[in-house]
Image 1 (cartoon, rainbow, N blue to C red):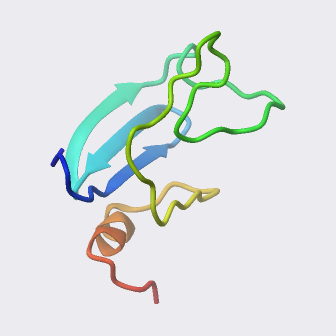
Image 2 (cartoon, one colour):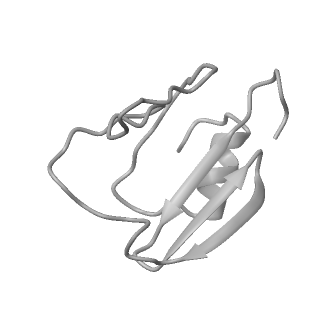
Length: 87
């Protein structure tokens, strides 16, 4: 990851694997572990851990965040990285 520059980070979860892409390069895959992904009715926080007794906050800025209700293809992630509009 490049410090002091914008970085494009994409993560997908297909029910079995968590895949991370940073600046359009594969950064790793984790097989599902029930301790990593859970569901609940709590609000979602981005950039902080509100469950901690001492919340830790992201140092930096977030821009153009998107959440999808499906797994994006590699081609879709590449288009987002290249900042090309979707068809």
